[in-house]
Image 1 (cartoon, rainbow, N blue to C red):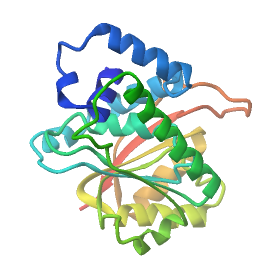
Image 2: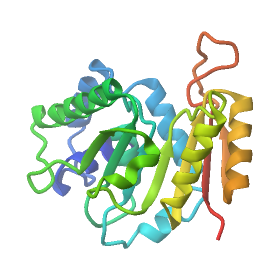
Image 3: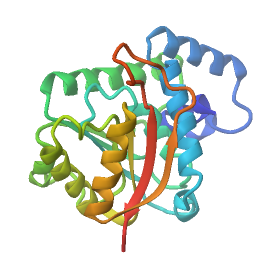
Image 4: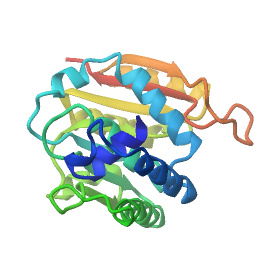
Length: 247
């Protein structure tokens, strides 16, 4: 499912139907895994997205939309998830590719994110997979303070999806509360705001903060396949929550 969605995201419509050569799928898997672009963490991340977003009506509303899904990834760091999350949200519509915008205050991380995404595109072209309309899906990465996003004229005023992987409210509640408020202000009325967290307690604090700011918690799930890290109680995408603006 992940690989077919990635094919649909990066390539022409002709390779996304049921007749896709299984060898192409196998070759794609080998190339992505060999370059550490499709890790076990990303496969489990996809599963969590599928589990959580399926409990909302997002794809039902977007099924016949004739416009791209606008997706903002805040504090995206090196953005391991860029291609996967874009492919996931590109499944439900018949329109243009997902428009992805990634932002992090750390310029070095943004540079890494750009190079990771470019490498993914090169793998698809290397395998002879034709690009959509001869072009790549729309991706932009910016290095700046998330709350200053309004200074970029090329970025939309609102988004269908706003995502924060491993939000860090425990580290500095005042800063993250501003980021949370900014994300709610930029979310469309029918859009989804999604977070993941490393820690149990931090996840609860994030949800409490979002609710105080006017968010409605639609789904909150613990990841059964989370990978434990060295610090006690910390693991990759330990929790995922899906929210929307309370209208």
